[in-house]
Image (cartoon, rainbow, N blue to C red):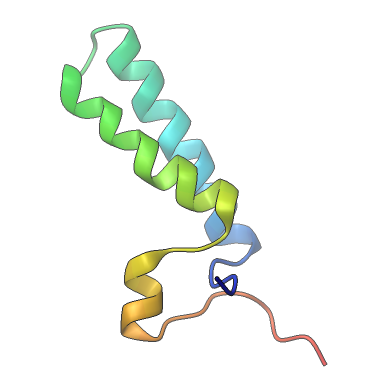
Length: 63
């Protein structure tokens, strides 16, 4: 698995994922908030399956 999620993208995914999980845990949004696990994991791993399928890459190019 080659990393395809860059720095800012990873940060946003982690923050949104944690916010959704916290909202679900406090019963603010219901159980659907646990969908936040997906962006959290993709942000932590640095790899996103849909990005891989579509050929997207937000990682900076290393020379």
